[in-house]
Structure formats: structure tokens, C-alpha cells
Length: 88
Image (tube, rainbow, N blue to C red; front, side, top):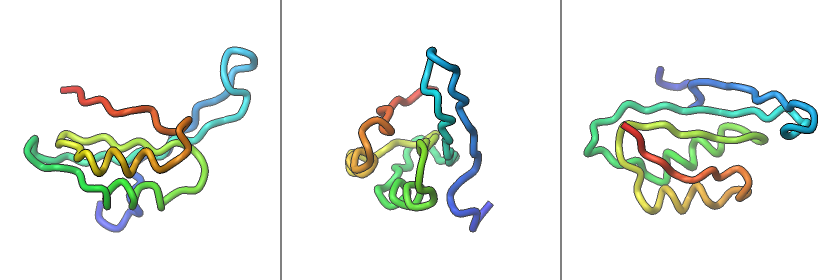
């Protein structure tokens, strides 16, 4: 819905003792259904990043992600940048 601050889903990855981080890690997920020809701009990534303070942002789209948007995403803590992958 419009005006939701960019976050469509908030999830928490629970730490499991010695098997993973012992701290709960929040994920802030934004999903956009675009036509395959539509390109995600850096402004969309910036808006997602600005909508939370701690945790991992995840942008899911059916469109393309511009090179500049990828660079924008890398402006955060590298441990929170999981890379880009397009799946159909």
C-alpha cells in the first residue's frame, strides 16, 4: 500500500546458540512488483535504507536493478549487503 514507509514485511532471524549469531537479527523487506523492463533506481534503495536503523534490508523485485542502485546498497555495512540475485 502507498505510504507504508517502504517496509512490506518485518522478520526476525533468531540466533541459535553457537550455530549462528546469538543476537536476534531483524530483516526489513520491501517487495515491488514491476514489469520486467522497469528498473529499480537508487532512490528506492535509499528510501528502504532510511526506513530502519538496525538490521538487514531486503529489496525484492520482479524488475531490473540498476548498477547505481546496487552501488547505493553497498553504502551500508558490508555484513548487511548480501549481494544481488535475480530469480524468476
